Length: 215
Image (cartoon, rainbow, N blue to C red; front, top):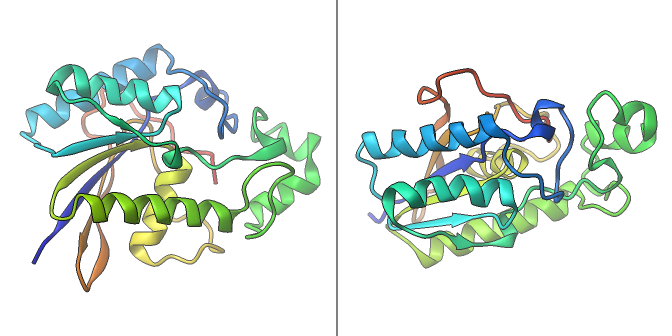
C-alpha cells in the first residue's frame, strides 16, 4: 500500500507571536528567537536522519525563512505555495487577543464562537479556510503520492490539517496546540485517508515554544 508521509512544521517565533497578536496574512518576519528555533528544527531533522522528497512552504516570510533553515542544511529548495498561508483574520489582524474583545467585540465573539460562515469583516470564514487547506493538502498528496513531504506553514493552517486528518468538526474548539517550530506528522493511505501519527513535537527546541493563538 502506498503511504504518503507529511511532516508539518509551524514557523518559528515572531514578535507578534510574543505579543499574542493575530497575524493572519500580515507578513511578519521571524524574531531572533524564531531564527534560532528554525535552525534547531532543521538540525533535528538532520540528526534524526529524516529524508524527504519535496518541501513546500507558505509564501509568507515567517514560514519561508523557517523553510530556508532546512534548505541551508539539506541543500533542497522549497516550493512556494500561497494556499498554505494562515487564515485571513480580516479586521482582527494586528490585534492582540486582549485588544480584540475591546476594540472589535462583535467580530471577536463570532471568532471565538467559531461561526463557520463569518468572514471577520474582510477576512476568510472558517468554511472558506477549510476548503482552501483541504484543496492544497489533497493536491500536494496526489502530486507526491507515496513520498515524504515537508510542509512549513502556520498555526491555524496546521490546526486545520489536524482537523482534516482526525475528522474533527470545524465547529468544535481546538483540541491540540501547534507550538512554534514544532514537528507534526500525518500520513495518507489510499482507501483509508489521513491519519495523525505524531503531534506538537518540540523536543528539539532548547526552550519552550509559544502555542498558536490563531484559533
